[in-house]
Image (cartoon, rainbow, N blue to C red; front, side):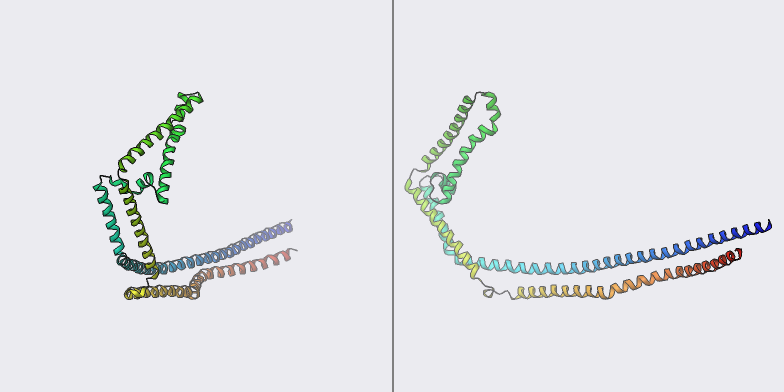
Amino acid sequence: MEEKNTKSEKELKLEEMKNQINILKGKASTLESNIKTMEKETEEAIGKMIYEKRKGLERSYGEVLKEAEQRLKAKEKEKVEERKKNIEKVVKENTKETREGITYLKNHIKNVLKENNIPSFVNSTFYMGVWCPSTVVEWCIRLLVIAIVLLIPTIISFVVAKDNLITAFPNAIFRYIIIALIYFGVIFIASLIWLLVDKMTKKNIDVLNEVKEFRKNILDNNKKIAEITKKTNEEMTDDKFDYTKIDRDIEAGKLEVENYKKKKEEAITHFETVTEEEIKKNAKSEMEKKIRPIEREIDKVKEEIDELQKKHDELKLSQD
């Protein structure tokens, strides 16, 4: 009986020791898991820090570079505007006589119309197109006006008043008669206006022909000015004007931009080869300081496990 009780005590002792061993193993496993978590968090923190610092570096140089590029663009724009002004001066000088001729022709047309009591609107592209077309543009205006006149009754009959016409004249024949009357009315009014203006402005056909001739001369002179302007723009070179100062500023701006680009590349290269390694090294050093005591504790726990396991095995053998 005593022997049975002694055996039971040993079994209880073995179970207690096994439980302690398992608890220590769990503790060691937890500590090892904590180390892995710290290592993972450190790697993530390193990646985030490198990303943020690199972005900050790129942003800083990017802002400075952008400002330098804006200054360069401003100088280049200044030269374009200065060149434009110089070309305009040359064009103005080369077309002075032609422009004066246009002024004289316009004044003559005004005087002729005034002397013959003809309205001044006769000297307009719209009038010439509707009442006295001779050029392609004027004929296009006449066709456009005719199309608009025909479009008015179409809109009235088939869009604006469509429902009212159907309600008032359910019979299709009567409705089409009304639509025809609308067309007739609009065309009649337009024709009446055309005839009244025609009669009022064509009192002296010779004067009208003279106005048309002078308008053609003005058009020819405008074409001549356009040709001179085009030729001047094509032939004008920078060596005909002094752009020394602004060219120096542009060249200095280009050098400044290139210098900042080079500095940016050097800074990024230094960051990738030196700064990144320093960040990694410092972060890992801090991590190792935190991990070292945990590793010592793990070693201690493992020693306790080994010692307890040895006692457990000896006790188990003695039981057998």
